[in-house]
Length: 276
Image 1 (tube, helix red, strand yellow):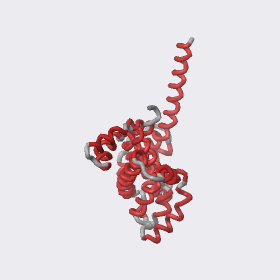
Image 2 (tube, rainbow, N blue to C red):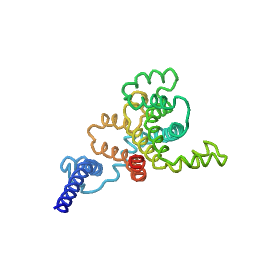
Image 3 (tube, one colour):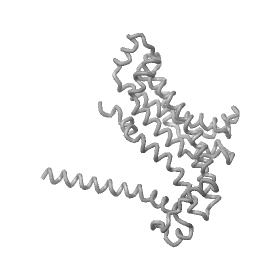
Image 4 (tube, one colour):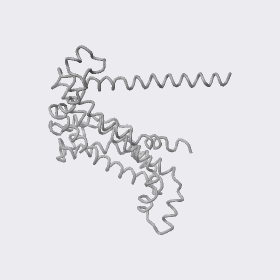
């Protein structure tokens, strides 16, 4: 009876997972299928497979719709943001986890207030601050704003990762004459790679897909990032659904590639500390 119940439970779980996977993948498959059709074929066969796969639609989206410019802007914003977030989160996480200094826990609690503040509540004030500093409507200003919003969660994850590592490793480095920097760079940081991967993936997806900050902080068309560019693209090419689908497909590729490459370490980093 127990075996039968166990087998039935596993079968039910598999069925649910298959249904969830289908619901998740189906919209993506439809968009990719539309991106490979003509507008005429889309009108007559909206959900079926394309009769002839037109990869030239992606080249048209890259050039005519200007999606290439938006992707480049997003890359320019994402890469420096990743560097800033990983470096700051690693340093702060190491300090909060392993160093002893007055007010450490209080400072950490205050620091995590950033996790409770939605971006929409501070973005207007942020725009005025950037105007006064000459950073408004610039990619460096957008980079700093994105990094500031991503750092609290990154610090939280890195602190948890460093706390789960054996403290004896750090002590051994210090006993051998090393410094805290040596301990962090050569010992603790390499061992915390799963958490670093988790921070990298979360930061990349957050910045790459962010619409609110670019909408408020960027006014120039040539500086638009992917989400903002796609929003205006829908207005400019309302009748050309195929072009919009091709642009959306191109915009999603980097996120899919990053997650596919780092998914195992990402899951390990997110769950690190849950079982010890």
